[in-house]
Image (tube, rainbow, N blue to C red; front, top):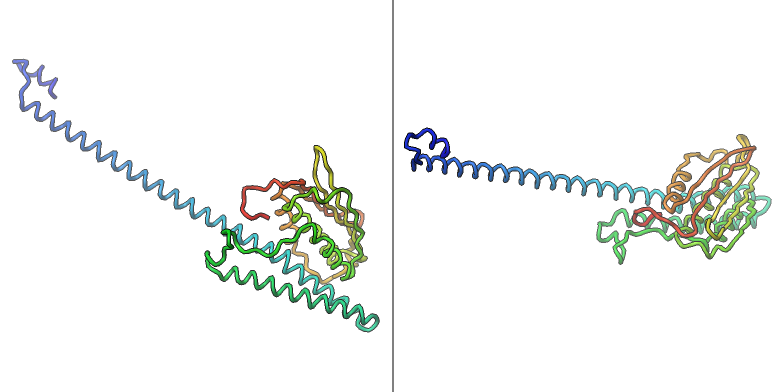
Length: 288
C-alpha cells in the first residue's frame, strides 16, 4: 500500500495515514501468522501425545500377550506334564495292583510326589496372578516364574517316564557341557514333550531319544525323539490331541534361533529340533 500510494499521489509523497494503514496491516499479518503457528504447534503436540499414548497401549498389550504366553507355557510344561505323569502312573498302578503289588505301590508313591509338586506349582502361579505389579515382581524387578529345569534334570525326566512304563533307548553323542543354560532349558523341554507324547500317543511303549552335539563352524545340538505310532494301538487311546504342546515347543525353539520339525512315516513319528549351542534370543524379556 505504501508503494502504490507513491504512484497514485500526484505529489509522489508518502502520506502518514497510508503508513499507518500499512503498519496496521503488517501488525495484523504478524498476529495472524503467530496465531496460525500456535495452532499448528498445539496440533503437533496433541498428535505426538496421541501417538505416545497409542504406543504405550500397544506396548502394554504386547507385554500382556507375552505374559499370557509365558503363563500358558509354564502351565503346560510343568502342571500339565506332572498331571500327565499322575495319569500314567495311575494306569500302571491299576494294571499292577493284583499281579505286581510292589510296582503298584511305587506308582502310587510317584503319584503322591507328583501331586505334591503340581500343587506347589499351581500355588506359585496363583500367587503371581493375584499379586499387584509390585508384589508380583522379584527382587530384581522380574516376574515370578516357576523353577526352570535344565540339562542336569534330563536323567530324572527319563527315569520318570521309564517308571511310568515307557521303554527309552537313549544315546548321547558329544559334550553336553558346551550347551549354554538357555539352550539347555529348551533341550529339556524338547525331550520332555517328545517323551510325554510318545507315552501318550505312541504305541508299543517304546521311544528312542538321541542327542547329538556338534562343534566347529556348524556348532549346534540336535535332539530327536522317535516312537512307533498306530491308529489303533495307542498307549492311551483316550488322550486328547490338542497340539498345544508342540505349538509352545515351536515358540521356545524359535526364540533361541533353532528349528523344529515333525515327521510321521512308515509307522514312526519323529520329532527333531536343531538348536544353536549358544542361544540367539529375540528381543524379548524372560523368553523362553
